[in-house]
Length: 260
Image 1 (tube, rainbow, N blue to C red):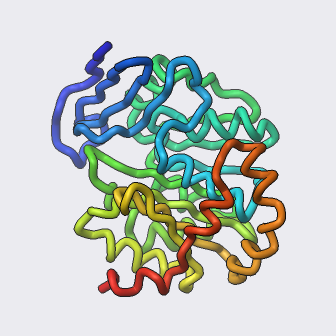
Image 2: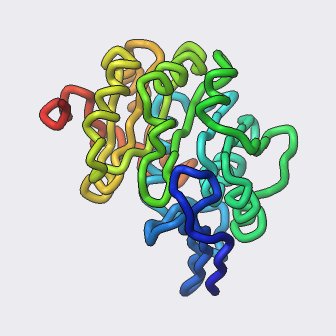
């Protein structure tokens, strides 16, 4: 199956890129203006997380395994929203997506359920939404890509600072960065400045993706140490290698040689 849902255009205009849904050997994939896979779903297991970077983003469970409110900036095929909804039905999820075609594709082709009391998908500018909703989330999942590139408006110093204001005490911002982006070091440096150095990271597939965890308050390392006895049970419950994530997590100083 191969469906094209838009036409190529200027990358800075939402909806300018061609959206393509491809299905091969039971795997359905979403592409946004490039060959990069924006989202993937195994048709027989639509609630699972097929892409390694999405599983790594769920590493926030090492620090908070019972968030009340999760804010997603960037929807893709809705993989993270579906997984959280399945595994944590008590958690309220708000997903903000600027491109209505992405929302339509997630609903039509990736089995994203309709809105209800625990799921709200909002067509809006994520950068603007964050500025308008301080203190509203325990976890932010930021996955903002456009035709294979980081969306600059979702990677500025001002935006990261606004994300910190959205977080409640103990909250965590989880950011998917492309490790080969020429601006990667600058984006990482902005995150460390916005969160006063309280930042950890996981490398996925040899730094194809770097998942960054930025904490609203100090003490993240101590929280992780305290959670260690529970990680085996949590890993089994969620089907995620949280113990492996804890082992591989590095703190901000470990990436210092890459920073400007």
